[in-house]
Length: 200
Image (tube, rainbow, N blue to C red; front, side):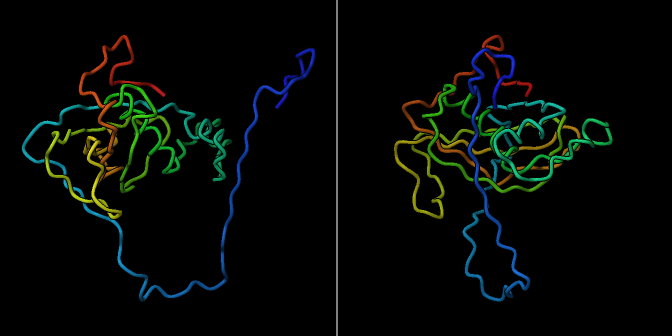
């Protein structure tokens, strides 16, 4: 992408993306597809969450996400004509929630990320509000093993559940994020420094 008004017309934005699709005419039967690697993660009962992150999505959130290379239909005309909000791709919802968790518990550092597990359970639409309820697993507490083995000893785990404020529907569940212990923090930033509420 070039700026036609610039004297040198030098590129100021580049994006590389790739994708593939396998769409056979006949779908193989699913009689024996092996065991599921999904694990049900129950949230603690009877107590308030340790933190709640509220995120307001921009009305054009879906269009903005397409700048990352998303190949799904943009429904641009529907957005601009205000015929109804478009649904966010699941990875867009996942990225927004993960960003909020890193900001709240990882000192706003990408290097704090170690592992993530979620189950996409509901639809999210541009302009809605996400509420992420978080429970911090204490240092030294037992943690369920992941499908790929036990969690790393030098990490801290945060269980979380995401719901849409407007509908009350669960959109991410059976979820946790593991953060590197050296960068983990339970201290909440002041609202003036970003806080736990954000508009995207």
